[in-house]
Image 1 (cartoon, rainbow, N blue to C red):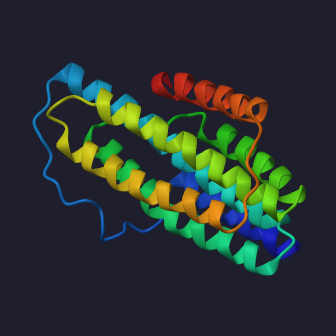
Image 2 (tube, rainbow, N blue to C red):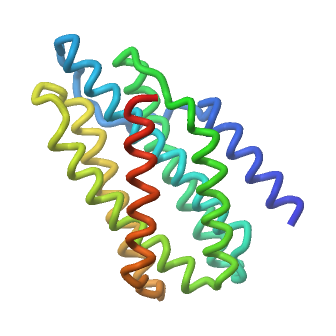
Length: 204
């Protein structure tokens, strides 16, 4: 357990400070000249998506921390590693847009890690169901943000579309692995948490 806690701390530190190495497979779409308001809007939207990826790192690590089955734990850690690319892409795009990550990222990492650990403690099927429900909401969120991006911001749009493909695959895999369907009240609570994160990180 101590080793797992050290891993969570290390992942949290890397996630918040942005010291993950830049991946080579960032969508290769050239940047577009945007107006000042368009740049600020794109930066705010990408800050929200970066915060979402911070939460994703924490959720997977929290679930791996309390997973009962070693193969499920390994799958959670592998999924977290795959999500690193999304985190790095969003942070890189923030830099290109002269925008900064949310100051609330540490808070959301801690809250998401606790939620993931709770889901894992309730059993592997619940944990897998939590992933499936979360990824469903992430796909819907990305669809909205793709539509809200400035028309000329093809680079941010390409990043979000690539992320959408990966998130859809993660959710489908969790369902096929035996994830339990989540009841509507729980989904609504998850939606509320997501809305709080979105509204606050859009501005700060």
